[in-house]
Length: 324
Image (tube, rainbow, N blue to C red; front, side, top):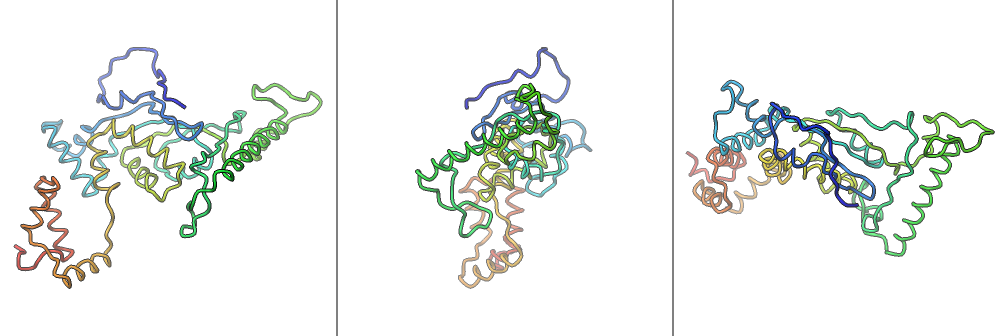
């Protein structure tokens, strides 16, 4: 399935709202996901400067340099000041199997309008996993995949899934007594209601929806669904969405990557263990050593370095003689 671009507007309209060049670039660009699914950006509100504007509301409209905007966004993300990120919104059109939608809809901080099988006849579209996605149950993770099935078994399973999907849709149309176009199949009998006929459809059936969400809650979604422990299928949708967010809110997404996606939470007991380990091994560092290491990895921001030193001090990783 190749990418295409959908023309979302027939008119060339000027606007006075906050312009977002990255979002404009992604509008209508359909990103294929799985075998028959997709996701694309339909509309947006705000940009990185909208986050900054909300955070600096007492100072009026932006008077800061771009570098300072980036620094403020990183500070907000690092210290979990989340409200300014709610000033940006994205609206997507996505198509996914029902079992993916069931996981997706658990993120309740969004607006959703979905296709309804009570009113429409569902298309004969259902998910058949690729051979690279067919695995046995994990021995260590009760809700995860283990090793891949042998190629021959995977091929047979894909064939069986295809046949069972087709059989389910054949029975679905029999219950409706209608074909895909709504034409009556047998004039001598009545079909049952759509809301009942849909109950025979498999979890792999594709549905679609419009999904609107603010940036703060979208980052929460991505943090959970891009995690390696998330199910492969929904992870692929999250990765497609992240591609759009990265273009639309580059500073915010960079901060999200650094402080959420690529970070790990250290608990209280873990902090005690680290402090005891470092002290017993004589591995505590001086502030000067920490500063030199920060330079070597490119951590130049003064505020962030001060926060890091305070954090290390609280963890007992700094030699007490050097505390000032």
